[in-house]
Image 1 (cartoon, helix red, strand yellow):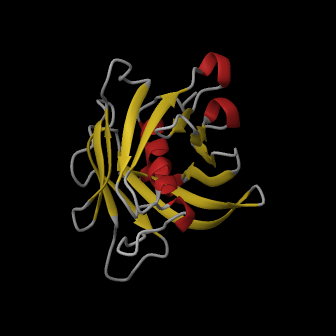
Image 2 (tube, one colour):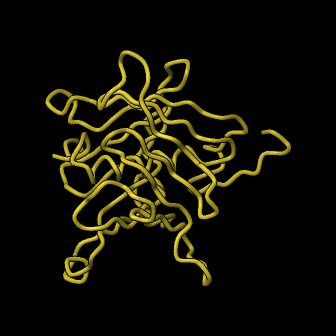
Length: 203
């Protein structure tokens, strides 16, 4: 790691790099593979994959896997009467331990119904919550149009989602993660955005 790069792990520091990471997201066809998406690096190596409803068999549940296929993050959409009456949808992300959800690492809230991601619409809080803050990251822009960014509370860009090249579009897009930030966490947030917008992780 670079001596001057501040690491900001959420899932784990092993997913933080001292260098900028350019990742390519490719959606999997639901009819063939059950949906979800695969994330590759510049060398076309699989570094992450996301399973959604088509594979898990339950709506509102997501699993993020590393390049070896090991489940590292379990995400679920909260339900219940209280949640039904809330003006926000809430999601929780948990570390996976021996194949089971364990420690909560972040929560995300988005407004009902899903609109374009204007500043402050989608906010993420890293666990444990601090007394003087209500959120740590926010999503700005429009994920549906692949013009979206994850920013820190101080306004620094953590990751930029965009499209470029002949293969760009809803099925192929890139994610640029800035040095020091947790790439697995960023993919977890993208998995939720994908589900919110009724895309590859939804049934």
